[in-house]
Image (cartoon, helix red, strand yellow):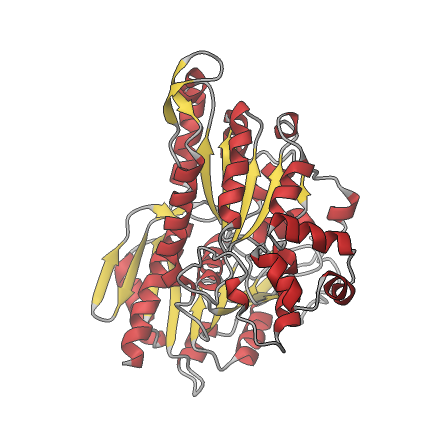
Length: 479
């Protein structure tokens, strides 16, 4: 008698287990025949055995449990069309031996080689294929699939998907997910050697590397097309080992900020002058969103307060949208107390109140006409969110501010650090206007007794370095 047959017998037999689980007895018989219980039924079997003196672990195959057992790791595998895509089935099989939650997306061309039914049978979960599926898109599944995983593995990654990702195309489910995700993206390319070495492909790879995308380099050898060179799909076991190594290396970060509350402001604020005109700035919110995403990945309870932006929202606990500086101030103060405050928002320093020669205010609910004689504007200061909170009785343990300067970068940033009573200032030179809306930045980290010049890097990379710095400060604070 195999282990599963023995377990079913201990639980009362085929008929009893089938009745309790509300499934057909033939399904139980199949489990016994295969000596395997589907993963999705493990929890139900555990419940049935909870009142019996059974060591259930003896009956389930041991899994490659990650170092942090209470952390759920999620991977999205995107399989693109190529002769090597059948090898991705082995990657699925290897991942299924772990406690990783796996979703799979098949591109249209991949379905010419393997079927969604085959993937579903192997993974025991729905296989996603269509961007325009009514069933999926009523739940906005392409966005959920983009935000849910810790890692998106594209294997095999064709020249086509590299070009789409590098140049911002989103014309199917796979490319839409990649463009809308904050997850770590790992590509395992597979293609003809001439395609791999084509200048266009090399330039696309360089773009992606600069943006922080990781590559598992293709192998060299004989190709299915009969040619020889670099472009072979890496062995599935190698890909699996690299993924597991990456996960285990980063598991120490997953709970780094566990039970730590972090409040982050991001984006611009808008101050209306009348129903048509307003005062604002060029902030895109990208840096603040990357910081929120990184800290949330490390286990922090992140609340993001953001002005109006046109970029995807990160996956964090709470997102609060505001428009004006006063609204942002009110929301931030209502969220106190918090352990850490990071003010990356570009808050408008003033709002403009229109007046006419008689010193009377103009009705700002209606459009201001150009024929108003002697029209002028009174600049009224907006509340100072950073300085007010940093000097309040509810001051967080760590307060981080941002300083956008056009001259005397370090001097002005240090002055802001002291005058507003904050712990860190991230300062950047915006004199050439090549920071707002861009993916790269070069900043200085200013402390009372230290100044670090960080090289030009992606805003995602800056978020990683800032998270490391905050963790260092928090560790010293708690000692």
